[in-house]
Length: 151
Image (cartoon, rainbow, N blue to C red):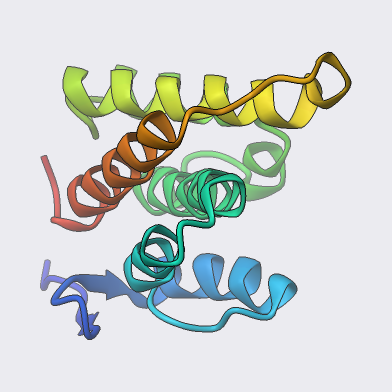
C-alpha cells in the first residue's frame, strides 16, 4: 500500500491531509491558522505561557485523535472516537503502540498541566514560566513523534 503524501511546513515537519484537517479546524476556531509547531514556538518567543500551554494541549489532542482515527479507519466508528477524552486517546495510542513510553508520559504531563490550568483557575494555580516553556517544548516533541510516520 503506498504511503500517503505528507505536506511539509516551514518548521520542516510533515503532516498528512487528515492530520492537517484536524489541526486546522482547531487553529481556525481560535484564529491562528499556521503551522502548529510554529504556533507553539511563537507563544514561547512571546512568553505567552498560559496561552502556549493551552494551545499546545488543544493542538496535541487534535493531532492525537487524528492519528488514532487514521490507524483505526474502517475498524471503529469515528463518531465514537470523537467522544474520547484526551487521556483515553493517549492510552489508546500507547496501547496500540503508535507512541512510545516517553511520548506517552510527555502527553500525560501536558494533559495534567492543561487540566490544572483550566480547572483550578479559582484555586489560583500558578504556572511557573520555566515549566510552561518545558511543557510547550515537550508538546513539539510529541508532534514530531505523532507526525514522523508509523512506529
